[in-house]
Length: 144
Image (cartoon, rainbow, N blue to C red; front, side):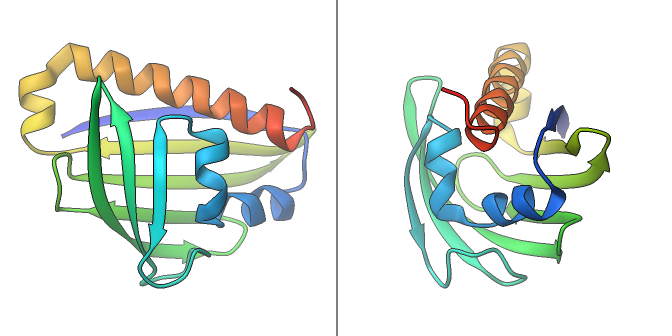
């Protein structure tokens, strides 16, 4: 298993950031590699919510269905899957910060992708987390 994390401070309240993050319809706005989001239940994250997503990663489109497995309002939310080409667990953590909210995004990748892709996959995941976190901050703070 490989674990990647990215933290960014966002000049918005924890409530505002959490509301935005827990609406899967917003994901393509701040995650450009996300081509499509199809809810299997509801778009708002709650324990048991299921979403099928199509993501472009390293030149390929990958379809994955994930489930929300943990949901603590205004604190954390976790999605995960053991299916698909890249089994993963993704966690959003939110904490109050002086200027608004400290958002930490943790992605744990399991399976063959980690063993076979090694450093190449690691660099791509880190770059994507960093770019997506920056874009989320810009969107929520009213930037470009």
